[in-house]
Image (cartoon, rainbow, N blue to C red; front, side, top):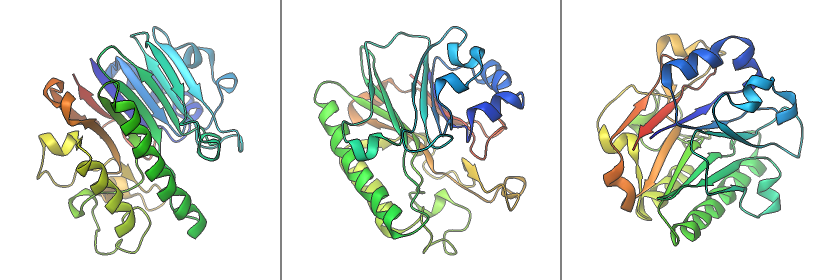
Length: 254
């Protein structure tokens, strides 16, 4: 089973620019989690909405149109699907969609960005805490994999300019400390599990400064798995050759 995660930064744009079909043909996901879809299902072209061989599930922002949003495409029909964490403040932004499979839970999440002032940083940190508690609750029934745009680089190896960004949201001590908490709770950063010392591997590049051409990026998109599922995970990949967004897809194979 190949599970793929991708912040598309606008699903309609990825489709319109011809990247959608190229991505599906080359990466071939069995299960696909999308973040920042920026669209409700009725705004999407039929071939995307209906999924061409995938069961499709969407959670859109109730706050404003064209903002946030997550989707799940699955060739394997999930046993159940969850939308959000049952916390209205967080769920109204369409940030989490989860699927239950026979052996694990998969949570596809678009974590908040801490920019635009102290209120959003506070929102992000509270979301983080609520999410970890939610994970731990689900984990009592079966192992958990979560994926998505975490909007924080964990260690200095995970971004091109760590010193220059030490006071920037996405690499603040308090944001990075939460990822430490996740690891201490028994969740494993799958890419780092396979490639503990690999440098210059990023998943996000600023488009305004043409950072992708220079590979001045951030690794802020992750797969985390609870420890008990680790023996089933065979590989992890970063698909930096796939274009269409300011993020690239990432994947794991079970």
